[in-house]
Amino acid sequence: MNGFFLFQFLLGENGSKVLEGGPWLIGGRVFILKKWERGLDVRKDLLQSVPMRVRFPQLGLHLWSSNIIGRIASTIGKPLYMEKQTYTKSPLVFARVCIEVNRAKKQPSKVWIDVGNGSLEEECVEYEWIPLSCTNCKATGHNR
Image (cartoon, rainbow, N blue to C red; front, side):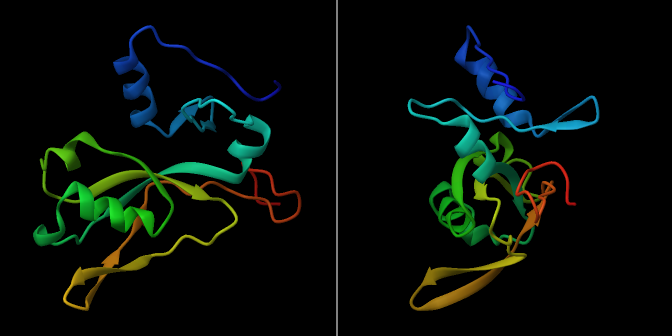
């Protein structure tokens, strides 16, 4: 598989640390890591979606729960995991989640969340890294 690497960890916790620690920059290139699942077609699946670490810097304390943060993350893509500091609520500077997003879609800078009683609140979204994507060949890693 040209351009793809497979890693196996003896301890599941080590694999989790590597997956949650990215995105990784090695030799000036970004390595996109994804947990293997049965039926994964790396040529198709990895090129259509990428994991991205997303922050919600102005999240109100009344929204600071795994369930609500997961719902907010779901408006952007498929939530993969919540950062340990977010899950344990320390430090309470911002919530951070890793989300698998579709490369073809424009990533929003704000999302709306239903907070109950028919009320909506706008939440700001910050991306730690947005991959380059070529409009011509649809490949990741360059934009021309």
